[in-house]
Structure formats: structure tokens, C-alpha cells
Image 1 (cartoon, rainbow, N blue to C red):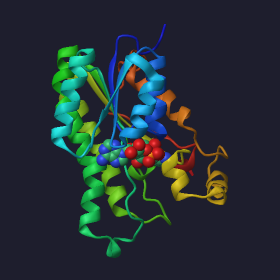
Image 2 (image 1 turned 45 degrees about the vertical axis):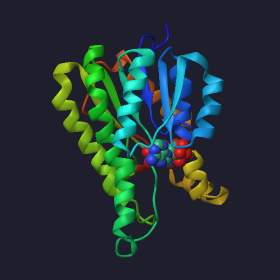
Image 3 (image 1 turned 120 degrees about the vertical axis):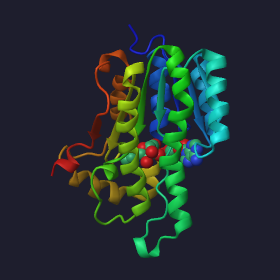
Length: 249
Ligand SMILES: NC(=O)c1ccc[n+]([C@@H]2O[C@H](COP(=O)([O-])OP(=O)(O)OC[C@H]3O[C@@H](n4cnc5c(N)ncnc54)[C@H](O)[C@@H]3O)[C@@H](O)[C@H]2O)c1
């Protein structure tokens, strides 16, 4: 029995990287899946691969008008939404606090943090019509601890905020059978990582991880499918670190 049969899901930032992996797994697990991204070319290519149980919508997660469009189109196409994966995110400039502009700080927070609020706000009415739902917010280990050597207070602020939004939403909507949990990946091999680290950088990163490798997108999809499914029906307001033991050191 597919784990997500009967679910209608929205996954953001899903034209590449972890989001695309989640979209592939969600369709394979029986979810009717709306996946969104600002990169329309890559999104449409993936739509051709995934077929009729998927729908790609171009979407800037920082735009409230776009969220209204996405949630309305998702429900019109597949019915009330029961799963929301807030995955889209950017790193922003790697600069110490005194060198970071207020504009860059606000851009990172809009895409990584305000987006999670907007997605939650506009999807919850549909989830209530669905009889409940699961929200999975992709934070980072940067939402748990500060990372030495890669300065970026905007990324840290936004990823810590995602954890807080998650817990507050969990307690506000538990009575509607709507759950919210956050996922905190460490090093995961995606375009975001390979743009930041060359092969030598990935080798050094792998050596620093107790499990002695970086994560693959499928490692994270396994966790996200679990949190979206009924197997996690009594889990809400929780945070899941998936980093090969890096932050246990
Ligand atoms: N890769 C890692 O090592 C790692 C570690 C911890 C957390 N994360 C988080 O995981 C999530 C996915 O990261 P990834 O590594 O797959 O990144 P990625 O850069 O490979 O993919 C991110 C996707 O988000 C899209 N996106 C960017 N801005 C957007 C916007 N305004 N609206 C809609 N879509 C937008 C991009 O077009 C891209 O397709 C992010 O939230 C990231 O912060 C990644």
C-alpha cells in the first residue's frame, strides 16, 4: 500500500534538489502532488516526467498573491490539500554580521521564513476542509546550532524562526488534526551544496560527519514521507535532525 495514497500535497522549491526528490517520492507513494518553484523551465521538465498525478505551478514563495493562487489551483485541481512541504530556501550572502546589508537579511528572511508563515496561513483553510493535514517545514541544522566558519546571521535567523513557527502552529491547530514538524538537514548533496562546496570541500565535509558521508536527497525524502504519512499521526511540534550525527558531536 503506498504510504501517501489519498493525500493531496504541495511541495515548494521542487524544481531541483531535495524538493524535486520529494516530488518524485510523493507521486510514487500515491500522493497527488502540486510542486512549485520560481524556476519554471526545470519545473515543467519534471512535470513531464511525473505525469498526471502532479501539477507544476510557477511560484515565488515570498509572494502572498502567489500563495493564494497556488492553494486555490491545488484545491481546484486535486481537492483539499492535506500535506504542505515548505522546502524552498536560499542561503544568501556568506558574510559576517557587520558586512551583511539589511536588504540581504530581509530577502533571506522573506524566502526562508515569511514564506513558511504565508504557506501555512493559506493552506490551513484547505487542510481543515480535508479533515486534517501535515505541515513539514524544512529548516536546517542552522536552525538548531550556529555553524562555525560559514557566517550568515540571516540564514541562521530564518532557520531558527522556522522551528518556532512550526511549534506554534502545531499547538494552534492540533485540535483540527493538523500537525506541524520541522526537519533539520546537515550536509545534503543538492545543487545548493555543490554550488557552495567543490569536490575537496565535500570530502572535508564528509570527514567531519560521524557517519562519514554527506546525506543524499533520498535520505531526507524518507523522513519527509514519514512525517507526511499517517505513520506519524501522533507526532507534532517536533524537530527532526538529519545530519549523520554532525550536531551530536
Ligand atoms: N543542501 C543542504 O545541504 C541543506 C542543508 C540544510 C538545509 N537545507 C534546506 O533545504 C531546502 C532545500 O535545499 P536544496 O539543497 O534542495 O536547495 P536547492 O538550491 O538545490 O533547491 C532549492 C529550490 O528552491 C527554489 N527557490 C529559491 N527561491 C525560491 C522562491 N523565492 N520561490 C520558490 N522557489 C524558490 C530554487 O529555484 C530551487 O529549485 C532549503 O530550504 C535549504 O535551506 C539544505
